[in-house]
Length: 59
Image (cartoon, rainbow, N blue to C red; front, side, top):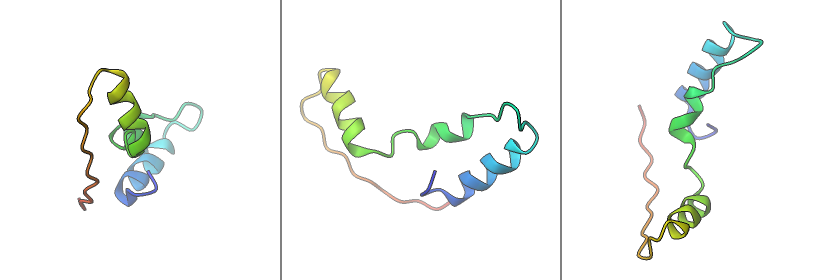
């Protein structure tokens, strides 16, 4: 989320409506930001030729 200012705004705004149980789905698009975690999950799933590129896009 730290790399998605619009995601942070949406998450915090919607969270104000549900303070006791904030929704977590705004975090989902940002869940694979860690290249090392993603690489280890792919390796554990049998992939052996992995090329990961981080591409920043503003929306």
